[in-house]
Image 1 (cartoon, helix red, strand yellow):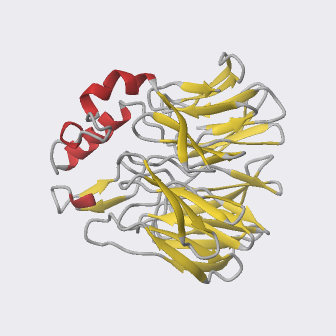
Image 2 (cartoon, rainbow, N blue to C red):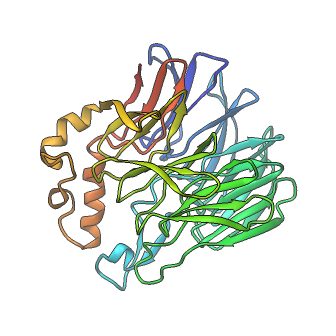
Length: 379
């Protein structure tokens, strides 16, 4: 995943190959590489000449953004994925299973000299941005892999314990919390992966209980909740000019809803390919990736795809895993309801060059990372 610094002509990327990269934004040439020796499925933050990111070894790292030299690292209580019994209805029903769809870590946010992030140890952390010293930590009831949003001195983010939290950024004290849905049968309709967006005093976030929520940012009062009819809302919403844009997973719909009421204004189907990528807005165009290994540019004037780009891996494996009508070949991807077959099926989806990261738009170029191991720059 990428975070581009608009002041310099390079971008930074974490990778599941165990390295963190800085690459030239014009040519794609490597500027430097930092060996983490652990997966880095988080989006970096750049501030004050440093780049911050989290990794599966349980550390948050701060590197010199120009050279890639380590400034400091902080060890949390350890990373883990969300897990549950009979997960998503797979067998064996009595076994506790880590969730293969818990596919990224909480990405750091930097504000007022501190770095904020969540962890698989169930805590939300605030560290001194210069030294990495702990300022405070806030305990939730389960894994925290949503990324924080910060507005008016408040940190907003959700946990897999089914609560969405507002935390004082200076002290780490809870301001309020909001309860979302629970599922103790298959642990399918529970948990918050989506990161929040705050606009005009309202905080918006998605939940795996198949809702997008709009809450009053000061009180936590529910303004409205949009039902996605059983489909997760994993991607983070984008808000602009009184409208909220967000994707759903299984139903693979991109929605435009009224920010005040949650009423659907328009929607666009992506042929049942899971949407984990968060939308990026630039001018009158929205950019989003799909697990089919495609990036789409959607014109907001008529909510139609202007163009799409297919990754190298998608071109290579589509004949095997994509039906002639463009929908997933479920039988080829997922062979049975046994847990191991679900994990193998996720790997087959990834082999299509699935795009779980969110596009970044800088100037007239769209940058996006793919599960095929490539970073793409598209014009």
